[in-house]
Length: 261
Ligand SMILES: O=C[C@H](O)[C@H](O)[C@H](O)COP(=O)(O)O
Image (tube, rainbow, N blue to C red):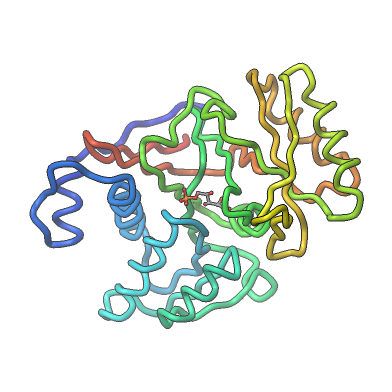
């Protein structure tokens, strides 16, 4: 797969255009996320069915879409939220919502990621929404991923963050052991994600998240993903392989748009 570097503009210029503010001297990570999100909102056209992502970067995109609707610059949009959190945000902004049952084909999805590798493979799920995100983003014609440059990695797992796996609560320790064994060559440690005070984090689907910390690079990602999904009780994993059609990266030196070809 070849990656085309199709655009590079100054991020400071983009921020000042988007926010009508003078360019700041140092951009925070959140400002970079906002720049990427606002750029992605330019891909939205009236009449589209839109996949609405989850997380701090996607939140900016949803805000922007709400703003454009309010201003009358967009109309006739239908949003398909990827989490209860995004559903609440979109509802509060007056974005009309639906679901995959009624709209099985989505024109465009916009969402963040925890890691992006050079082939535009992603790790997602730090906010625990990986299952609904994968369902929605798997049903879209175009998936625009928005990140700040800290999310770029040489290989998935390269940031040191965990690879999240959604599992049913029933005998999760048994499945955490199976997952650890699957990646024992990568020095895998498997931990349950906790909400607070030892209480497990529960996803919107009532499941748990097992986090895999890998010391070494995973070999074939597709093979690894398939092996994870063969474990009964695993619901989904956080690797989004060959799904993003575009990745918008906001960094100190500008916006880079990478397109899958
Ligand atoms: O479940 C969480 C989602 O996959 C998020 O899109 C991802 O974790 C990126 O989140 P953020 O934009 O907050 O870094």
